[in-house]
Amino acid sequence: MQTSLVGYYSSVGNLADAHRVFDEMPTKNVVSWTVLISAYVDNQKPNVAIKLFRVMHMSNVDPDQVTLTVVLSACADLGALDVGKWIHKLIRTNKKLNKDLSLYNALLNMYTKCGDIETAKVLFDNIRDKDVTTWTSMITGYAIHGRAKEALALFKQMTDTKIVPNDVTFIGVLMACSHVCNVDDGKHYFKKMVHFYGIKPRMSHYGCMVDLLCRAGCLQEAKDFILEMPVKANAVLWRTLLGACSIRGEIDLAEEARGRLMEFEENLAGDDVIMGNIYASKGIWDKKEITRGRINERRVPGCSWIEVGSEINEFVAADCDHPFACMIYEVIENLMGNMRDYV
Image 1 (cartoon, rainbow, N blue to C red):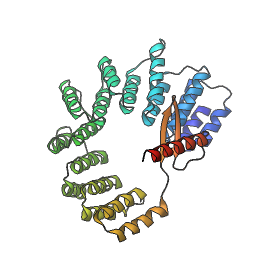
Image 2: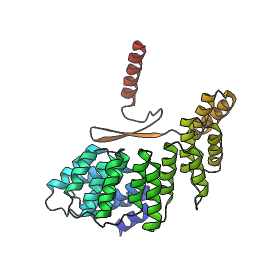
Image 3: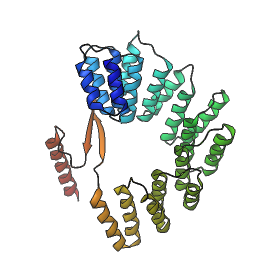
Image 4: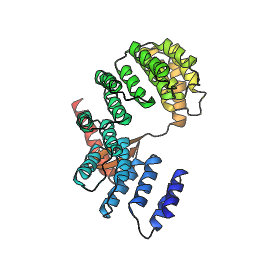
């Protein structure tokens, strides 16, 4: 009952009560630990999930394949390759573990998202009975790393083996086309997805097409594509167009994209930063100052993660809460002094 309560509180985003119920359990088994770790992963706190897994491991509770699949997902979200490798070692050495395809797919996903594409390829080749998730993870991994040729070749190999691609597979394929600005292939695969496989495009597919057109410099076509979509475009699509306008110096189209973004509740300071840079490049200083004023009114500090010695550290701008903050700022000051000496 208490484990179910942890799951319930997690589903409504109440992590404080979920953790409180967990702490109140007189005995904790692998299921209760897994539910709590999943709660933090599902609520976008992978850093805490990995810390909990370490505590679970030190408490001599053996994880099962579900626990490991969940914590590998947290590693993928954070890019925590060293932790992921440690978990892979635990999997190899645990003879009693049920090493199912879902676990291997989670490992593959972790390696591709953490940047170790070569280890991912070795793992992929060693998986005997691959499903659509296995193929999709590898295709997407190649696409993320700009290896479009390998991604598209693997997609052809996948379809030749009669594995039917799903909507996520086509995200990887379209990403691959985008990275090499191959507009014709991108349009071909988009049409094939819709008309041959009968897959209804999601916003992610539309986003890949807009990104492809923008990278190729077809900004007007990208704008027309957004306006002709059967669903209303989200802020990400207009933001993609705005970013491309900044690179190409298209001020009129940029102003239109910025105007569209103003319609959304999610009005980010970064949009004004891009717009301000465009105005500055054109020498329109009065509009540059107006956008600068808007930035200062609502800037929210960003968050960064860095893995040091298999430990995940979280930072925000002007952070003073880290336990080694004084030492970190001292090193930064020394680095700044060294740079000034070189100048």
